[in-house]
Image 1 (cartoon, rainbow over the protein chains, first blue to last red):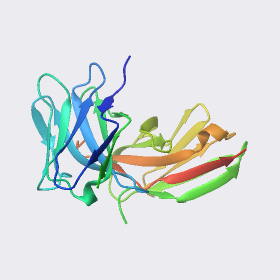
Image 2 (cartoon, rainbow over the protein chains, first blue to last red):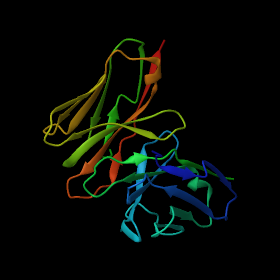
Image 3 (cartoon, helix red, strand yellow):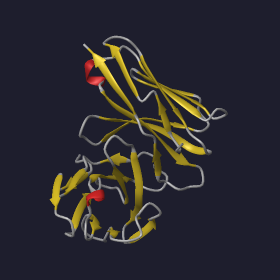
Length: 114
Length: 112
């Protein structure tokens, strides 16, 4: 019973490049959440998606960041023109449905911008 | 201060002792959850307590919730070296939004 999968686990990008982070939810889960964790801090909510729908993107920066969860395939968090301040761990979580309060987290992608 | 603040920020105890961590929050909640994060790893869900519950147990874990004080505590009994990790509380607000709001965490170190 595979858990939430994220890849890559580590990603290094130069300033100005694009970063693409992938998340495959647990089998049977149709809700995906993205969180960002800066060093020595707690996780901050970014976006909540269902298949083909963005439900809540109140935590997403207004520019350069976008997320999708297509009908087929993983959820993608895309960061365009990365800056040093984007360096963080990005975690994806999934849940079965709106009434399942427990979110199951992936191992995270650690993005380093040089 | 933010929704979900843990206290203390760091805690070191001897193996076998009990560890208690506290979490305070600001707004009404639907439920409160505790997660563990080992260094450099993802989060592991420990326990969920709903707003109409006052206490919950799971193995060596005991969680209490006081909605009048907007606070929760996590007690780990008979601590083990493997309990060394950061512990976060996360709140799910009561207007049906499922996004979790995390505190800054308590870093627990168990000394063998």
